[in-house]
Length: 222
Image 1 (cartoon, rainbow, N blue to C red):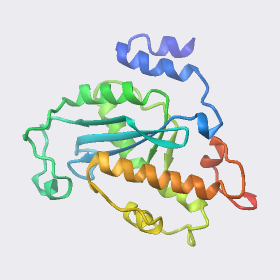
Image 2: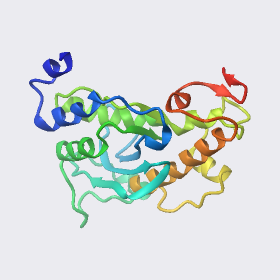
Image 3: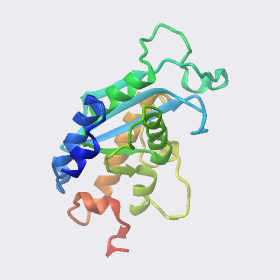
């Protein structure tokens, strides 16, 4: 009831998004919809830079579901030509683009109440939340997992203080890197890394969703 009152003055698409959180997320990983996503941006300053594109792919029944995916490009008022060599996104170009508000609306409609997964997730989540703030809306409501953090629970990790890049994890898991530094490509790579992590953690125990949010080793919770 409190949630309904809080959302009363919000746009319909936000109310539709928030409504999905009335149902509790299953603890069974096979029943959880994970959405692995990535953003390409004009830079790394969350205060002034903007989202160029959002790529996402769902994991259903612990399998990558390429039919359940999203890629949206954002029209730019702010643009940094120095980063084009990294992400390859031009300010104009022939790729259809949405304005920021429409892109965020599409993203919310796609993710619903899924558990979000990203590599170094804090940055991508912050970029989405700042865009929401510009729209006068609250922050994302979804649970979030960071593959860089969850990896440290595996027996592949020898130093929990080390910083692991996506490239490093792809190498450790012998994954070929296609479409690196595109939002859709990095989301797909992160999804493969995530499933490798889950497989490793599942070797010695039956995992439930909560286990991915706590520090533990093969002897149990740390």
